[in-house]
Image 1 (cartoon, rainbow, N blue to C red):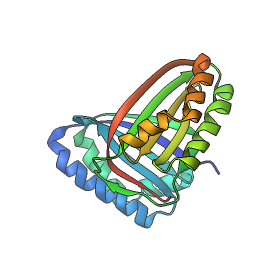
Image 2: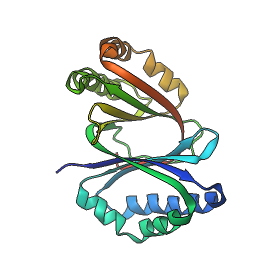
Image 3: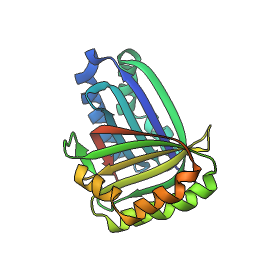
Image 4: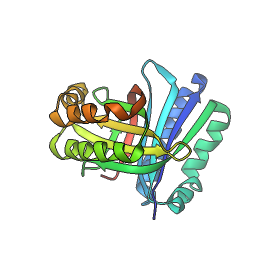
Length: 210
């Protein structure tokens, strides 16, 4: 059974900011409480621009996602979205590596967190996977400050990878970048990378089942 893994880019009309926060909070917390197949939901925005929302979601299966979209809390979000969103882009991802610490996350608007979204286009996905997979596994095993590391490829563009990562703070992120395994990954993958974009995000609501 394949997990359902998606990334959303939402353009929010800031006239609805407070309503969006309230309904989003209910959607996230109720999903964790009532839907065993909803594995993780992460809501964030671009720094200093709350109108640019980035949401990453994981479900145990397509069926689990369908259960979620039929829920009253999600339908309330859909009702809001009809007039609160100016734009909506969905990237459906093939899960590659989905790592997180065992302790479940329930984080709401933590100013200390370091959240990153990287988009990487490569010339050879198989070769790239063989380099990045052990690096991510080592990071999760050895670095206490690494909370979440997800990687998936765009279903429509399989050589485009998305990495969503959460660190305890900026110091933990910088420590990660200084590790030998991260530096080895950079050196080994350099010849495969055609394009790379890195976005710093502000974490608003980050929940998972650990």
